[in-house]
Image (tube, rainbow, N blue to C red; front, side, top):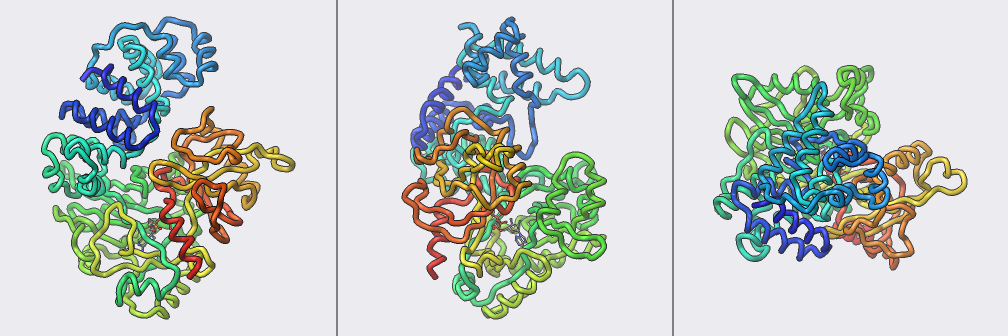
Length: 569
Ligand code: ATP
């Protein structure tokens, strides 16, 4: 397919915010595409060149893009700047300079060139990037370049997520969304959405049945539900349950395999980023586990070298950086607690009951170098025991307990009652903290003028939309206000993102694009006539910035409603 044809679809997608319409447009596009290009189309419509975990980035900032546009169309950088100021979007700027010609270039060719540009590195790479991108632009028609130019600077946001793509794949083969569960199941087990699309295109839905875990490709992690009391937990999870401490660190999906006689290790975070580089100490220890290949689910948490006590998340989080890794690893050592095994030496255990997986895990992992441990676990059958163990974990500085269903399969990508969390907040009224999206800020008044932001609007997710639940003006330390301001500044956009639903009285001074997730603790959840979610958070306090979560992973309206109902119990 020609890129120009794809650009027409992109324009249609840009013009609508109806999820149904978006799904239909995508389905039609996928239907028309060739099996050899559907994966590329799927990445491109998401503004990417590959799934996130592959870490392909352009490193082209707006300033560099302005130089590229100037070179491509032989105009002055100053003129590009003026146009950018006026239009506020580099895609439109590039499109306005482009000539009505070209348009014959195939999607695969554009994609290959973009990959080549992103892969440029080392000395002189910036100049090579400029030249190659400018060449690419000059071969494109105005509409195509409008979209292509937005991708390197991270501005191709068409307002839908992977879930809409999964729906569209179902519509492509079945004419409706009925195959979505099957497509989603495959995606949960193997998150390369391009690969899934290609498989559906080539082999139809039956091709998805064979999708199995493969070390090196992330599996979407299982998530826990909340319940208001130990009694309810036993009622829902089972008469006998497994209970484990809930460590408050980093989720680590550990992948091990052999390649050319060498052991490879990859660690994926909760939102499936490849975080391997951050944990060289853990990687060394993981290599000592006696398996050829395996996928483990685990949590890494920092501890104090002198006292051996676990560190609160705020300190463990210092390990999340890209520079001075060795140094920080010494200062904040980590322990990896493995709590599940999903695959070993060619065999998938996704459907194996948890009790059996635990036995396999016990037979596979022991203590390694004081850095790796099997998560401790007890089998209990009374609310009293659950409460006692939860208290014990809390006094050890842990976040609480996780109660797990013994005969449940590993539910990749699903939040369900196979795992229930029992945190400190469970006893304090609201059963859990709420992960919200920061949607915009109001300028600070009085003492807070210096921080920039004086209040910020937050929301939760309903389908593809974000609906507001609170405008937060207190409950932050000075340090948190400064941090919020620093982060918010990078996200400002001139117009309200189309997936935001906000009452006009709550519109902030400046909108922020969907990116920053904040964890909020509220005293109470109440009904609200003004917040679009219909519910509001009373006395909200910022617990932390949740860098390990994407906007897609914020609390959903359904979850918030459940938390609201739980308060009445
Ligand atoms: P939060 O971490 O805010 O509670 P979440 O949405 O990230 O929310 P949950 O589903 O609530 O995740 O809880 C599961 C998380 O708890 C996992 O992502 C994992 O990082 C962590 N965890 C800590 N200890 C365990 C354990 N023993 N078993 C499973 N998960 C654990």
